[in-house]
Amino acid sequence: MFLSGTRFDQLKHGISSLGQLKKKSQFGGVGLSIDGVLFALSYEGELYLRGNSHAETLFKAKGMETFIYSKRGIPVALRYYRVSESLWQDQKQLFKYVKLAYQDTLADITNQQKTPLRLKDLPNLGMALERQLWKVGISKVEELRMLGAKVTYLKLQQSGKKISVNILLALAGAIEGCHVAVLPEKLRNDLLIWYQELEHSN
Image 1 (spheres, rainbow, N blue to C red):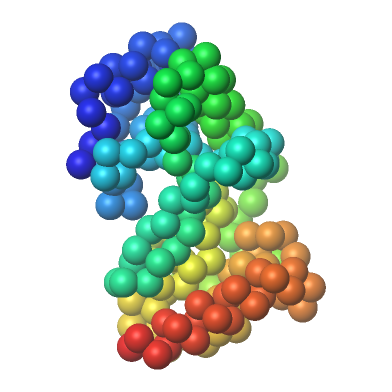
Image 2 (cartoon, rainbow, N blue to C red):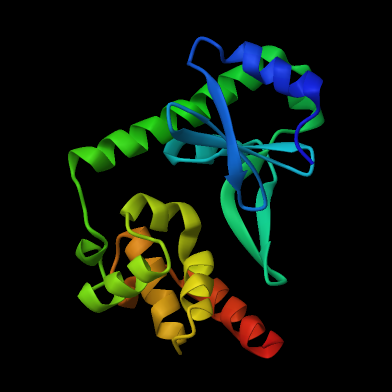
């Protein structure tokens, strides 16, 4: 279910100065973009704003709920944050957040274009893993970062290739920009627990 007509019109009107709002299927919902910059997601009638850098810090501080995407029954947290009922009522604050989500996403894309990286250039990834990622439709660093380690791991697993937990940790390190040996402990533990749950469900 997409946003109600009233809310979509409200959103479209509020950000008309940024450009034309376009819709496309994304993560089982509808992605919202302007000039190819995907900055929001509608899922089951709710609106989620994409969190990058400052926007993500703010959204978390405000207690906005993280979007949970279920892949084969396994929950995966994505960097999108739910617009609450009270925020819908506060037009000024809502559009401030929407514009921040758009501008931060645009800034991230611009920065990555200035320093074009191939997947193999990221920590822990080499030519072999880059080729595997290409085969499952992930060819850009931005795509890997957007999907996250868990969804990417599931895509690789579905390709039929037997892969270990080390690949999951390597992907997480690549996204964080660090060697797998210095992956933050909280993140490592979260991934190991998720991996064990995944193995038990198979």
